[in-house]
Length: 419
Image (cartoon, rainbow, N blue to C red):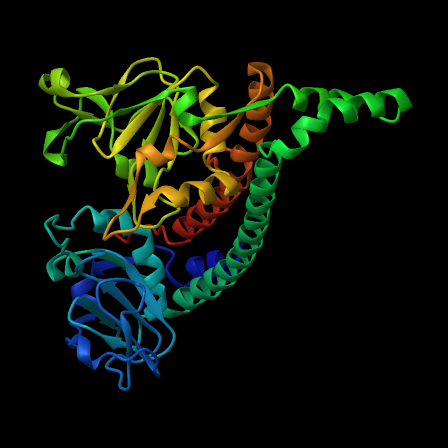
């Protein structure tokens, strides 16, 4: 039996009392600061509509060891600060009596985060009312139990954070490694192609390396071509969020390529009204869908290979690149450092960075045999899954650690209510 179980058996064997949050704590609202009052650095963080400080201030209005809830913007997010801070008017903070540990309530509210989020009023600015928080039922075990739970969860949180930091560092190292090997695999040096056959013959005659001869012979057969020579570009047609429906014509919006899709996709996350089909333009299976705008030069021209079984509508800030190569090979080529550097020459740097398709079509990429394309794609797919796939590799391990911690926390804070 754990120390917590012993305390519960000793101090509250018949269960734990539950009350409304508003009947136990004093839920207070912060005070507004205007933007001109904020400082870039200072002694006290200012929280407004996010758990990320809005800025700093030379005074505080909330003492340390306090739980707070964001009620506008990132409404429903739950924070805790060990040090004093300034709560702005979109923050409610908990003032607790002596028989309640403030951090105990922080951990408990985290277990109810999804329930709280479900009560957020969705508008142009999401908002959470004070009434929702006041009516939330919370357990109040004896103070000794609260403190022991906080002690255990503090330790577990620290260990989980240290492990996650190690995994994140390893993931970042793997990403750099992946980028290096991706660029190396797709860097068919044009200067060396001309002499590849000669080198292969020389190496083979010396019997120094059969593999080197084989690889050099392959390289000798690799040609280069511009995107305009390889295929053609088809621009999409405009649709808006007002056109979205749950079940309709599958579509890819340019913004989703930045936020949702990776190297390739075989399913869409959005649909537009069926009656729009006649006026839309579509990417076919095997096309590569490319954006033509972006916040940065690197973002412009971000690509995703469409490998679904049906045509998919594309937004007018997208192009479908239609070709006869392996679509994932083309998509991988478009992620390389050298391709991005070449692409930058054709980006119009205006208020919104825009890709000039006439220039983009002049960029050259390697055109190995289809067998070589497939071999390279198979290698890069394994790397990509290791560093990006939430279902496998390090991202999956990080996700599993978080779920394990949340499961353990939720079980510790699941009390039997007293009759």
